[in-house]
Length: 268
Image 1 (cartoon, one colour):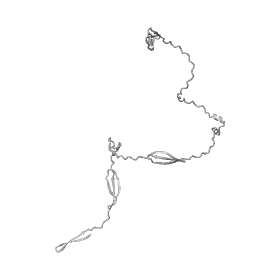
Image 2 (cartoon, helix red, strand yellow; image 1 turned 90 degrees about the vertical axis):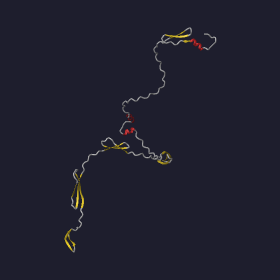
Image 3 (tube, one colour; image 1 turned 135 degrees about the vertical axis):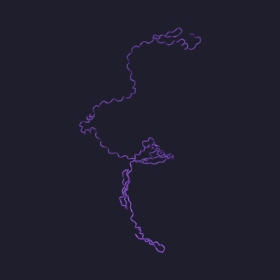
């Protein structure tokens, strides 16, 4: 601290008031620091807090932050799709709110170029074991491909004659003759088979020879007898002994006249 003398000039003689003490600014101190220490989650409902685990010039702040209280359960969402629109509703509700997601129809594209397909595949040439095929397309263009066929192999050497069944049986220990062995091949009589399905009717056979005359049958009952009666005028009438209806009467004179050629002067 330095002393400063203050003087005031009054008239011709200066007046000294006294000495005043003053503090002069000191040198700059070291800067303070602040850093974060720990961060701890506190219980729900408690107050947040900050403590300094450092010094006043080098502070280290430790934070306690309480966790939030558990919230109530939210409502779920349900979705449906009807082909063009998306429906959304909260779980428990009965109606969906729909948003149409179908876009406007696009512009029709231009027709594509006609494809080129195969019209025919024909064998067109053969050289040795190589066949050439020609493919003709619908636009008229052609291309070819070849197929190499395998060459016939050489005939193998003739094999030795195989043993007969009797020889094989003899080699296996059979001691009888070949005839006895053939006879032994006949198995026991089998069970009767099921009745077969009836066959279709055969065609009619040829006419057989005439059979012997049969015995004479019993005598039949007498038939009804019809008796004709001719009247003087040429009318035929009938009677019978069977009680049945008689034939109609016939005028034989009129019938004969109708059958003869007409003649003049002929009287009957």
